[in-house]
Structures are given as C-alpha cells and as structure tokens.
Length: 273
Image (cartoon, rainbow, N blue to C red; front, side, top):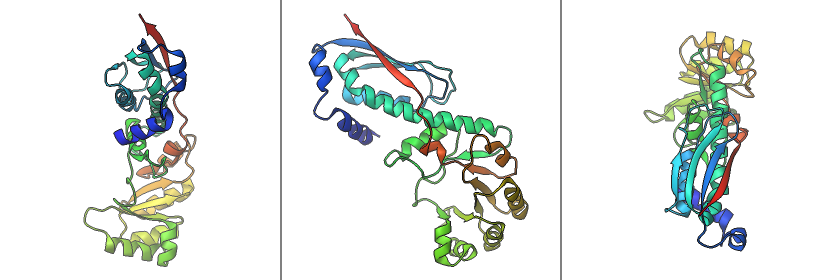
C-alpha cells in the first residue's frame, strides 16, 4: 500500500506544492476536518491516514468513524499539524477515501437489496489497474465477498476459453484435469445446454452469464445442488432481488468497482495560532 501511496503523491505533488509555497507562511500550523457529505459506508479511512502520515509523520490524526458502518454523513476524521503538509496530502487522501467509500457504499446497497435470500454479492476483476487490492477490500467493507484475486489463484473457464478448447464441456473437463488441489474451477455457461455440459463434466461451480430469471431458475433445477451457481451480467440494483430469488448462490457485479460513484468527502482547514 505504501508504494501505491508514494506513486499517487509523486503524481500529484511532484517537486512541490507551488500554490502553498506561494501563499501559505512557512511553518504555519492548522487543524482540518474531513467530512462525509452524504449517506454511505466509509472505506479507506486507514489509507487516508497513511497518506497524511507519509507526507508528514508528525501530523496528528484522529478518526471519528469506523469503516463498514452505514452513516448518514458527518465528521470522519480530524488532523492537526503543518498546514503545508495537510494541503500537500489533501487531494490524494480524499481521492482514496472517496473512491473506496463509494465502492463500499454501492456494495452495501446490493447486499441490502438481497437481504434474507442467502445470496452473496461478489466483486469481479473489473478493477482500476493498480488498485485491485484496495478496491476488493472496499467491497468486503461494504459486506460483499471477494472473488478470485486474479488469473493466478482460480480457474474460470470463460466463453473465449471454451471456444478455443472446442466447447464448454471439453473446456470444463480440461480445466478439472489441470486444476491443482484446492484450486476452484468455475465454468461460464451462456445457455442451459452449456449448463448440462458443464455439470456432466463435473464442474463444481457455474457462472451463469446474462441469463433471464427464468433461465436461471432452469439452471437451478438442472444443478439440483450438484454445483454452486453464480449469476452475472448486467445485474442492477433494480433487478438483483429477482435474480437472487431464483435460487442462485452468488451474484457477481462488475459495477461495484468499475462504476461506483465516489462518496462525497471534503476537507476544511483552519489556522492554528
């Protein structure tokens, strides 16, 4: 995380904060308040703290909110110390905080929408390059479940793999034969025919891509508990409940990380005598 923060600070601060150098008295001290300006779930609070610490270890930080708890808004954190240091770290800290809180907030909305069904909301690999670990942590903070971290820790046979292998059933058998002990094997199915082929091959988990609720219900009946089922593809807050009620085990939502609006946060500063 520190390497990522350092890159973000280098991108923003570069050789120095020209504005602060021009208008703020050297040695000036200040206190600042970070406010959550709308309802949502804070995430990345500790990342924001680390940004300020990386700029100036002598800044004093006090958090006023726990990550993962829905709040209507209000004070997130206070800090005090060098005014120049606070201003240098401000934008990077708020960028992390707003982005990660937005992901946690959207995830919490999806989790709430399927409450009582037993379905778990999953993230995907549709993350910002370089930010995957933080964004997936934000999904977990919002009550979701992280899917595989990358291509290296699970096997997911997608439609392109199946096309190259000669079909879903063939690709599923090849994947199962190649999988090391403990490695999850999941097979994407676009049709109920694909579902039958994957089940016959022994796939323990199926990704049901862009199926209607009726098709999902059919897949649930075909699987009959022989495989875990994950629904995916264009699922929104308006449709997620109906998908959950078909009987699937998981619903994956790429929008959690690729389209979550940032939570509105701000920093206001005042001089200290």
